[in-house]
Amino acid sequence: MSDTLLIVADSERDANMLYATGLFVPDPFIYLNFSRRPLIVLSDLEIDRARKQASHCRVASLSAYQQKLRRTGVKSPRFAHVIREILRENKIRRASVPDNFPLGLARELKKLGIKLKPRTDFFPKREIKSADEVRKISAALVMAEVGMAEGMQALRLSKIDRRRQLIYHGVPLTSERLRAVIDCAILQACGLAANTIVAGGKQGCDPHERGCGRLRANEPIIIDIFPRSQKTGYFGDITRTVVRGHASEAVRKLYDTVLHGQKIALQKVRAGTSTAGIHQCVQQFFTQRGYQTGRRNGRMEGFFHGTGHGLGLEIHESPRMGTTSTGSLKTGQVVTVEPGLYYPEIGGVRLEDVALVTTNGARNLTRFEKVLEI
Image 1 (cartoon, one colour):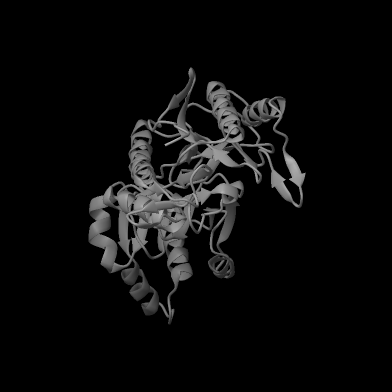
Image 2 (image 1 turned 60 degrees about the vertical axis):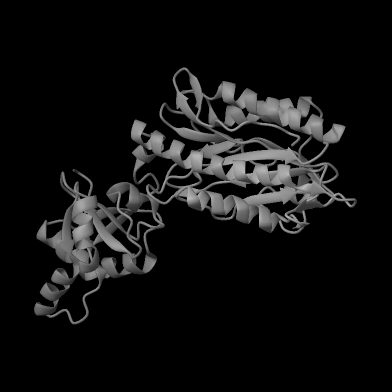
């Protein structure tokens, strides 16, 4: 390999490290790839497990390197000293690192004579999903759908009182309670849910508002679920908008427009299509339907986020499909398709599916139904 790759991170949170090793480790460790078989350096606590679960890597003991360095006069060997020692053993003086590489460690390595080159596209192959990765994303998506099904069932079973409040098991149904129902179902399906969105009425007009307080009948509720598989680390992502009770004509029209906009985007998703172009098509359709986007009364309304994003070991990956996006879709990418419209006097509507990009079009991986009224 002409380029030496270096990562120092934990693989619980760092997607590049998990992609490189396939091993969940909660504490930072060292990954170096300068030969056919990468080297990982870990604490003795992790070594035996790493040899079983990351058999494609050579595994070395961090403590063994630290003992060696102490014998050579380094009183308190740190990661930087270990990395320099390994590189020196292999007559290497420079390495490429991800652009989120720790700044303090980079400074230490510079003082020790190691040159680092940050790369934004550290593992460009991460964008292109293998058949196995598509299966893992699909499995995580099923977890999201399990959570969505439980959330929908709770809404269906809720009663509507005189003040349009939803009553579930005798007490008011809140965003927090419904989120707990969803997240518990995902946990039982071996997924981890974080920041699940259950936003009703005007709260749904802030796309990343998690939602709080009592849910009401006859107004749109946005439910956006994006769990991570505990086994693989891959994410699923799904959004549905529903009304418990009866939707107004304004909400119906808004929903039908977003649904049609999503269909337009899905029809455009194929290898070679401009990412910005897909977004522009949806924007133009919404405008033609009379739904303008812009700032009014001090806040944004209309369609003011991207049409979609890549999905994999991170919830938001390349590519992006938005106003400022560049490039074209490639075969094997997995993207969300999630247009939305938001107007405080009506509420918010967003619908999101996950699609695999192929040369012939989009293969929708999402199976969950789209129904406005429940």
